[in-house]
Length: 361
Ligand SMILES: [Zn+2]
Ligand SMILES: [Zn+2]
Image (cartoon, rainbow, N blue to C red; front, top):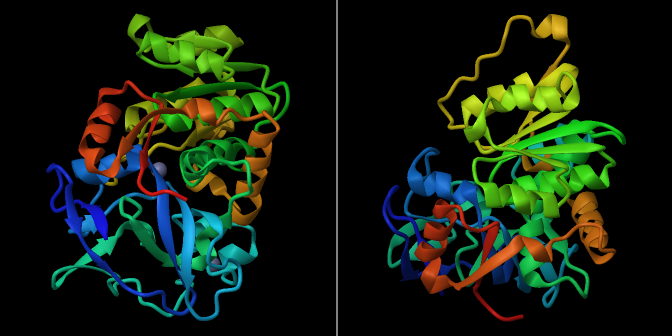
């Protein structure tokens, strides 16, 4: 099958012919239809996060189940599915306490370091057991969520990462309340989902923070009430002025320690700052000692603190009711062969989300 392979950080992906294993116990083979081009993949390409190369990236994926291995009961061949990039075991302490996003227990007998992809005799890893920049993905079936009729595969793919990450950060991690005030620091697809989910949660004021003017305009289409350009002055001070002392909930969706600190500073006394962006692995974030006096909460959010088999169907239902705009997130489409162009477009910052159209349903 055809796949885009990262051979070394800071080099273009190569389109290669790979062999993929048959599904083992608990696994499914999924024919990939659509894959989103996410900033997280870019972190591995640019080397700010380590990757075991050669590897197939791609973790925002939807497709059709081609074949299932022994013991798989939640999906069958022909099902349209989101391919989740965490595959919860279902029984560990995290899974049993509604935090499956934190599960690190393998859900199938196949060992984590056992390869499933091959380029001639060389083993190729599949990022997060998905490896979605390819015609097929071999993945533990516990990560698959069925897609209802009427939800397109491009939209379903985005639910696999950026939508769930943004929605879940608001609803699960921060628990944004009606009438509250919110600030969102970010530029990519996740921030638009934070903004529209905050609107859905009933926030009365949603401040988008971005250096690019036209992105502030797009943010307003998704529900932002105010736009702040840090290029025109101190964004923390402006957010505080706009809200009379700071926001109830501040979200960092870029992945920089400086903006993580800004999110903390934008939160009012008793407020909450949530880091959603992938701050480089070796960075340290410094906070004021007076955190105790201000009773602020500073926390991370991984994959929207999501309960995948609950939240993803909810999100798709909200989309079908017109309460979440997911069609408006897809701004460009590329074939798999043009994946490097898709990443160039992402780097240039001109799109909310590019989707790779890899196969047909
Ligand atoms: Zn992602
Ligand atoms: Zn688990």
